[in-house]
Length: 397
Ligand SMILES: Cc1ncc(COP(=O)(O)O)c(C=O)c1O
Figure (spheres, rainbow, N blue to C red):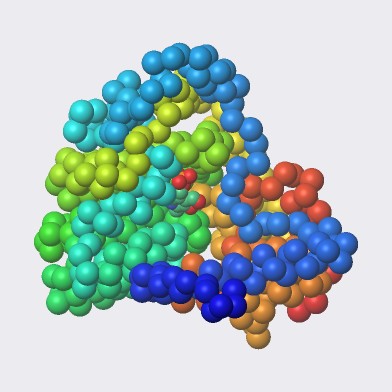
C-alpha cells in the first residue's frame, strides 16, 4: 500500500467551517513578503500596549510565584482575595457594589469569558445580537455554538451605537444574548449611561442576557470618564460585564480579567468553565490585586496622556492627506474612512505598498466595517511618528 493510500481521512466538525475566514491572513502574508524584500514595515494593526507592566505588579508576581500553596490547582471561580479586590475596585471606580462570592468571577483574560458565556446561553438556532463592526469573538462563538447572529450595524451617523428600535420584535423574542462594547473596538466610540439605560430596558423587556465588554473603560481622553453598565439601576437583573486587566495595566500577556454582575450568568459561566479550564494561576491573581488596588492614579493618567498625544499625531497626519476623523475619547484606536475610490482592503494594501505601514482593514471586524481602517496607538512613539511621516509624504491618493 502506498503511503498516500494509507493516510487516514480525518473528518473535522462542521462548526469549524462556520467560522469566517481569517481576514488578516492575507495581510500577514503581505507583511512577511514585504519584510523579506527588505522593507522596514511598521505595524499599526495590533492593539497591544507597548509599554511594560508597572513594577509593583511584576514584583508582586515574583513574590507570590514562590508560594507553594499557589503551585497546586487554583480555584475554578477565582481566588476569593482577587474577587474581593475586583468588588473593591468596582466600588471605588464606578460606585457599584458587588458580592464577591456570587457576582464576580476570575477569567483567563476577558476573551475567555466572552467566548464561554455564549455556550451558556445560546442553543443551536438561538439568536445572538452582535454589533458590527465588532470584536470578532462575539460572532465567532455564536457560530461555533450553532447560534444565529443578528447583526446590529454600528453606523457613523448614530455615533457607532446600535439602533435598538431597528431590531424586529420577533428577532428580539428569539434572542438570548446581546453584546455591547464601549469604549468600542474598533470604532473607538463611547456610550453614555442614557444609552446603557435603553439597552438594559430592551433586554429586560425581551429577557435577553446583556453582555457588556468593558475592556477599555480606563483608556479615555479629554476628561471623558466611561461608565459601567452596572451603574444602570436594575442592570444586574439582566446584565453581566466583562472586564480586563490587559489594557489599563499593560498586562495583555498575563491573561487575567473578570466577569461581574448577574448571579445566574456568573453561575452558568462557571459551569462551562469548571468543565473546560482549571482557573488562572493564583500568583497572577495576587499580582492582579496589586494592579487593581495599588496602582497609583498617576500611572493611568500618564498612559492616557501618551495615547492622547499619539492619537493627535495620527489624526493630524490623516487630516493632512484629506482624511478627517473626530478625535476619539476612548479605547486606543483611530477608526477612519478610507479615501474615495478605495475599499478597506485596497487602501490597507496601498499603505503597505507605498509607505510600508500596516493598518487593520475595517471589514476584518464585519461587513459594516467596510470603507474604514483602524490604526492602533500601541506602537512606540518613534515608530508611530515615522509611520505618520511616511503616510504624509509617501501615500498617493
Ligand atoms: C473589545 C475587546 N474585548 C476583549 C478583548 C480581550 O482582552 P483580554 O482577553 O486580553 O482581556 C479585547 C482585546 O483586544 C478587545 O479588543
